[in-house]
Image (cartoon, rainbow, N blue to C red; front, top):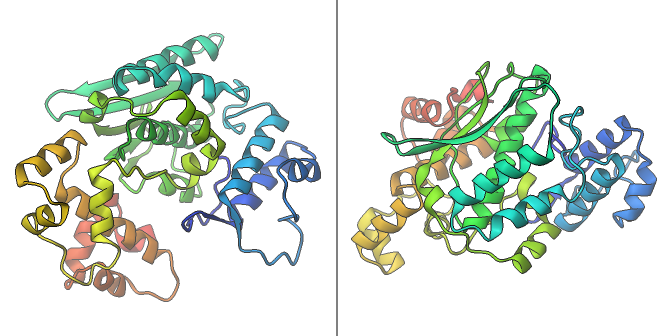
Length: 348
């Protein structure tokens, strides 16, 4: 996936240098003039130069470099599907077709129609649709092309996650992917997939798919065309590295209240209603509207902190369990496997 190194941990509005170096390595693979795109992106230094000590670049620098790379290779997808290129500007046009829709379901329908018209594949069978399981109230966005190399299917899956991040921005909600399926084999390096999917991922499936609450499909689009133009300036950062949190979302407000220190007891639901200054009935309705629950938000918060801690050297699994509020390491093992599909040791 474009711009995803082996270590994908990002910090606030800064981008670890590994992301930038990965972009430049990819540029080199396409015989792009690296000096030229660095100059066009207004970089004051060469990240590939030996001895370069800068640890981070700004989100603006990273986004500009992505744009210049896409221009140089003529492909906004970064070359993940070399037989069908995506000309620079395509995402903007698709987003413009989506933004005046009544809700996310209508917006996704427009995006799928746009994709079918603008990305013609001669002789290939392409599946791209949204289905809803009425019994579980879950929606699944899927994409598969019969002429894609099996080795790039995990990149195609990550592209679905990028589109869901755009959808989340359109409706002002975090879209929590509960499970994902990949049409290709498990890649040798899974850091990129893990970056987008802290949930269980099944490989060797018939299609690439992401599953999420169907309630998001009912959500109205909350941004306009001018806000889209502003968003697109930093879109590579927000779509690839760090989603733009929406202050409109009750999920975001609760995550802020919970923080990252789970050694202390988390607020009860009743205490949470007091902190948010709303009734229990209103809070449940708001959470249901966003396709989530207080328990899921708590689980995801602990999962995200656990994943971050497991990536650090020097911490044992038992210490990570303690840091995330588990007094019993075995309970942490069970919970982590439920969240991610892997044991803490296997994930590490």
